[in-house]
Length: 180
Image (cartoon, rainbow, N blue to C red; front, side, top):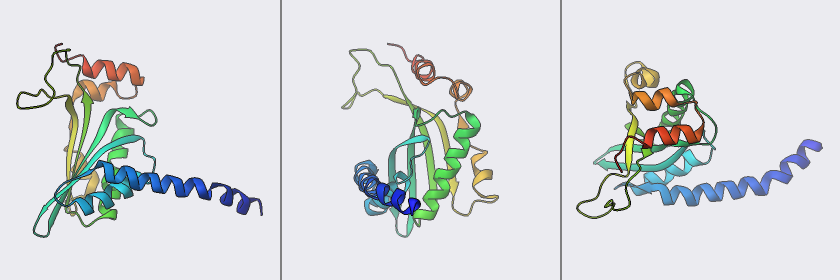
């Protein structure tokens, strides 16, 4: 009886969270296979994950679809060390394959760069505003599975070493390498 009352009390919140995931999924989906990207982004965003998913892109040609997923390298929903981050990426890749027929998932973690006041951030002479600190590619039927494929991931050494540090410290460290 108490369990039924508890479930009934949280049903509207769950429905609101699902509707929000749909909206955010549409906003963060890109690519020439946008319907697949929307479905994938929505599926990934229905669960609160430690790493913030910033963008989900699905591009394809013929029957071949590839997903690109960008996660924030500084905005985590809970602290992550390198082991926790690797586990999180494996979970995102596993969920992506479960939610869509994509053949490959490319995952990047990016961090913002500090740019000077006069930096050009749009147009032909735009400067990058982010830097890749983690990158991995996993094919659906990778030999050895997801874990084996992720062993070949690129980790920016200073960023990896700073995982688990406070959010402010990590954010400051990774963005200070760019001249102002």
